[in-house]
Image (cartoon, rainbow, N blue to C red; front, side):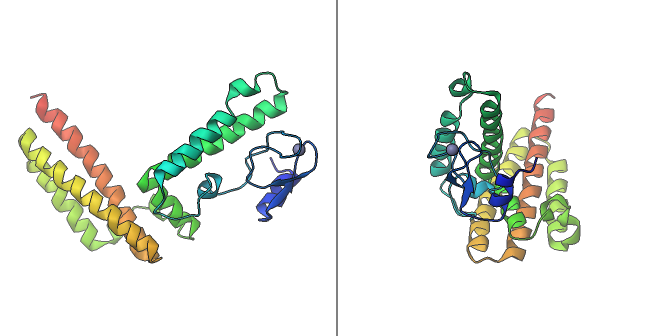
Length: 212
Ligand SMILES: [Zn+2]
């Protein structure tokens, strides 16, 4: 649904007219300062929706506090007696806030989303592993080691190593984004995506061994 308010927001203006009283509202405000009416979610990216500048290195405590505060402000109980339009806007705000929070709190999703904002959209959806010989080789060796792991202890050792690798990648990823080295950030994001899949496989392998 496109309305004039959405258009004004999409144009990147700081102020938009309130749908109810037509007074000016800051484009990210949940409520109109003049009449108190809840506002539509608008077109903000996930970072700005939660009040931070787009970056990989964000303070998750700040994000969580802000998210919980916003969720309280738009809780359905507060809108039970309001007109249908305001109930619908509160619901729309809740959906947008949930999506923003779920994306930002997961480092892999946050990295992929940030790459998208920086113009490397959908890079994460393609399987980059196949185009990167070094990564492909690492992936094959890891799978082979997992296939050969014949005991729970052996799988556990692989899990510990993969977990440590994932932590290293996160730290490298933060540095790559801080330097705005997007090709490297893209590669590390692909690597992290692969590692996460691999960790799932190790868990499945462990369950299979435990059942024997
Ligand atoms: Zn208003």
